[in-house]
Length: 550
Image (cartoon, rainbow, N blue to C red; front, side):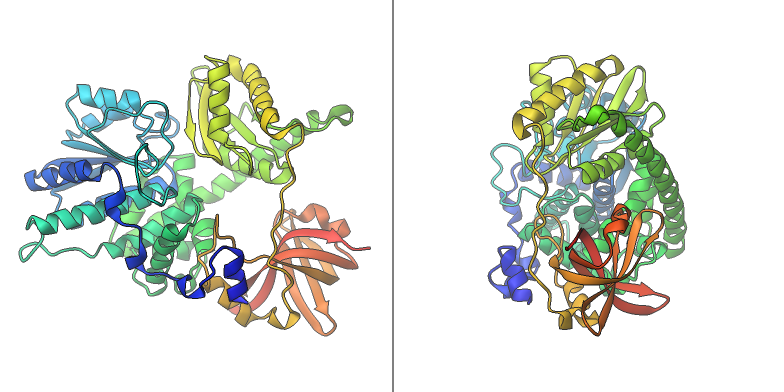
């Protein structure tokens, strides 16, 4: 079974399903590496102060923690971190963030998961005489900053084969190269122990999964090696605490646990307040302190869910006004709520996208007459490029923007919302037409009923890591519905039978609207997972799609 599943994902040799660290792409292929290592080695030898400026999401938090922990382990005399506020500073190394960093009297500013678009911020740092080392993975614009060094696999002329490294992965590679240089120059030796940088892979795995980058072969190695360390009990106190406060067993952890349980709690700090709490949780060596900070993050995540639910309900009401007189929804959606929270708008955009299969931008009031938008795309539309097209064809509508194919952020003046919405819808219509193509569910075929077992579910959980570009196995088949009900108002809970004499539970998150169809004979697309309740583990179907059979 696994051989066929791997083959469906382009992995024809099952022995390559779990490659080791020795199979990682060579660090030497990263452009700008020598200049970056020179900067860091010089500061280590001179006892200089390095200030790490990260992003306010999980990738930025884990990357900041990797940078701080790694540089300290390599012998840096002083390393501090600074995380911009989503609400006061916005994204990236802005001039205001540089001014805040300058108060710490740094000898070097090192960005993590940002900086490739920070032209004015780097310019300000240069004016203050502070060199900047940019580590990033976002797509560069037409111009790149005048930094002392830039390490980014997506910058022009970079031969590094894995273009999907997360920000935390870029930092990890840089530390590996720095360790090699320090070893060669005698900095590491009898008087200074050489650190095992593999101890940082739990953080690399968490940040990589959280940023939903493509799990190409290189990222799968990084994630799998990190997961193995967590399962073996060799993770940092913060990662362990985040998993435990979410009710997940670190000894059985999977990429799904990192992405849907640990990462949201870490992200909650940056969404509702500021990310320093999250970085501190990942840096501390004190289990009790990590547990307390994880509890605070857990509470922030609970508040985030409450805010998100209210915003989603408001967005649904807005959408009803777009469908009057039987007219179809436009090919793209730009939504704005006067009381929406900036930190949660991206999640709301993602939820609306999933429900209506449209590119979505959710705007919130950023103050000073400006709106800040979080954009989420669908397959077939490069979100950053679409916003860039609007910016080029309608100069002045967008103040600033950046991002990826599937997610982006932008800022515009409140008065520009309506013309931007019209221009964005037309840009999407030009690429996707009036009705975007419906999503496809790719199935690995039917799963024989005898394999719908706890043993199979456990095997599939550990056969990954699964994620974007290497999706979790999905099966399809027909079932008889034995019972159906709603749980948590929006989730569909079923008891189904694939054949006489065999029953299994199934749950469809946010599929409660299909309750009326969940009767008699139905066809399901699903993933086989393990449900643990009060210490009892049992197989369970995780539903992706349901349709009635006549």
